[in-house]
Image 1 (tube, rainbow, N blue to C red):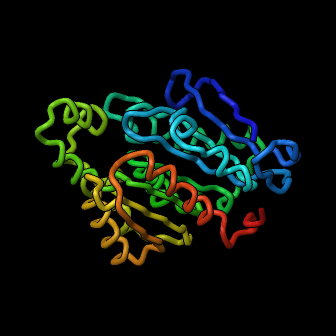
Image 2 (cartoon, one colour; image 1 turned 180 degrees about the vertical axis):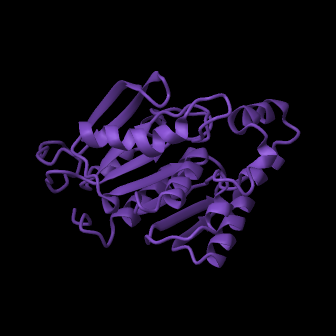
Amino acid sequence: MAWLSTRFFSQQLGVSTSVEVLLPQPDAQGQIGMSTPDRLDRYPALYLLHGWSDDETIWMRRTSIERYAASYPLVVVMPRVDLSYYQDTASGMNYWSYISQELPSLCEAWFPIRSDRKARFAAGLSMGGYGAFRLGLAHPERYSAAVSLSGALDIGHLSNHWKDDPVRRTKMNAIFGDVSQVPGSDADLLHLLKQPRNEPTRFYQWCGTEDFLYESNSDFRQAAEKASLPLQYSEGPGDHSWAHWDREIQGALDWLMKDTEYSGQ
């Protein structure tokens, strides 16, 4: 695959930012130990989101995402959103507008990416798992599938977990304003589950049973079942660490691409 680091100005953020992009390289037959995908004029795109303490480079640094994605006809877009929780923050940084609207439009103009819904996916870990599921729930007309690995899916639960941590509490308030107002808002995934959905967006959720977010993941799963959300859920031994996410992203990629027109390898 080709690995591009792209720097540009975001109108929504009002600052320059960056994104890492993996592009398929169908004719790279001489690369030892690497698969190559079918050649397409334009490819589906996976927006792969980072967590609380990370940036746009983290998936490349902590996993073998390039090797895992190489056999699929798939562009992987890894944006930087800082510590925003994928929100239009209380401090005035429009990260939600950026990630949900501006970034896909820019990438589809710059790279060989299809612009139709069925060719647009989102995935992420921890805070990024929340971001991916919010994209899928808030914009089912734009995303055909969303993946959460150890996702921080319940803001209310997380805020309560950190209520005695003044540093994290301050950061959450800087992002959301009054965190107590999140339940029932558009930032609340449990609230979004109750909204009508006309498009059959698929969801994939994994969490380790020793993860501090396991309880909130279980709660989300139960709420999703009540809402008849098309959700594939799995869990297994594991805490909140990269060894598990490196393993689980492989299955998530297979799930994303399976039974689609892009499943051939």
